[in-house]
Image 1: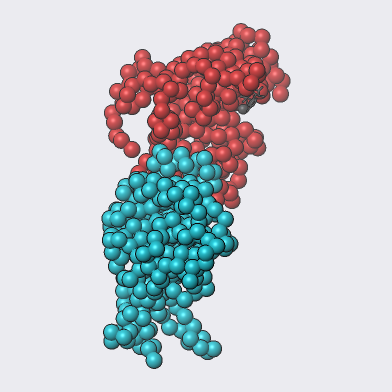
Image 2 (image 1 turned 120 degrees about the vertical axis):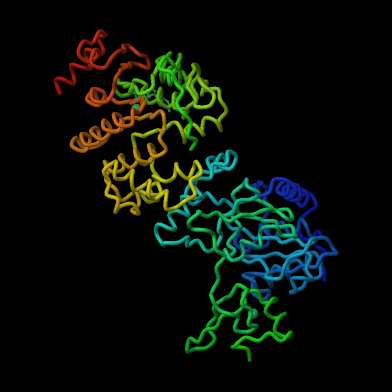
Length: 285
Length: 266
Ligand SMILES: Nc1ncnc2c1ncn2[C@@H]1O[C@H](COP(=O)(O)OP(=O)(O)O)[C@@H](O)[C@H]1O
Ligand SMILES: [Mg+2]
Ligand SMILES: [Zn+2]
């Protein structure tokens, strides 16, 4: 049921146009952070206001929306954003990756391969990958403009010096089409390979920081590394306890008061889709 | 980095500074300064505090835009070019390849939260080094050359003493084999014994590497030891210049005479 007090998808048309222009610019310059005038949303920063504004700008009445938080459709954040668009846009929603036309996500890329015509919208807390070593925004902007990216490798160097390997496990920096260095948002590095050559449109929205960036379909995205410490898309070395998948990203969950644990797919839709088709893990009931 | 044969003939100045002027509002930072620096030469710039040394150095090194003047550098690929009017990307590229800058305060020239190895390796990575082991080997080599124990390679630079930080800054700058080094009071703010050690080290490096350098200092002992030639600044202008020994032993300008005698009395 649509709440008639709101314009379609909450934002007014003027604001959506402004955001769409930023998105188009982002698609034209893959990986480049486009500033936009972020609006107050009826939810606090940190709850994905950037992603919500991008979703609001791309949604049409015919879309089917899926919202995930760390891979799950049923967490508070995912449920509340899904509810928000059900109310303000009246769009159909789904938990099935393959049935969705727009997927808003926090911290994961779905396991199921995405297809042409789908849009994946990432919630981004910190869009600037150079920030941790160079806090000055004037300077980081210049570094992007002039392709001065030595600093990114300093960060990876420090990782190896301290831990013996590249310990960065989330928000692992990538280079887009050989040009812009980009923060893929805090997805696990396991997901990094899925960023590249993806048939879907990928949009990134940072609300508090007022930045939008984008990857058009089939963009080349490379994870930064060293010749003698190549990038590895690692994950926990277990099969899923519920569906037995050996190729999905896993969460470790505690199952009882005695501290028993099991590894399960972080992508709940993927896991639930596999089980009825006869895939069973060792912990399946 | 590219490995080009040095085709500079000895008649071509590495650096030709012409008429550099910088004002801060109505106040003069430095005025109409010109000099040439030839390959392998060290130019010292002395003068009391406020005489315009830092302003001049920052204008010449491209950290600050002068109001007037040219800074012509004999580039590897394009021969003599005015670095004041070249594009910012080109100038910044020079700044991390053929030029180096040692700051007076290590905090301006080092990344304090980054390890010694990361600090030294940054310029290598900035010009495309992508082999961790190689970067580390070269960082280790350079730490040794500036007399920092290689065992400290993974310590953050903030944990180093003032003298060590200066030496680390020097290693970080020289690792890519720059053709021109700018230094602003490299021994300033250090204890006398620490200064002496740093000076010794610098003299060794200048001699072994045949460095071309412009060194700004208010300390005449520094230029006596390091500089082939000397410029004396007062109120933003050069009042005297010449071979270091000549200027210090037989100063012509009254201000230089004062400067030299005050040091002798000290
Ligand atoms: N940022 C600035 N704004 C205004 N005046 C400045 C600034 N920097 C330096 N000056 C003035 O310019 C003159 C030269 O300063 P500086 O180049 O720092 O001299 P030095 O390095 O020889 O001590 C001094 O009178 C100083 O007060
Ligand atoms: Mg000074
Ligand atoms: Zn599963």
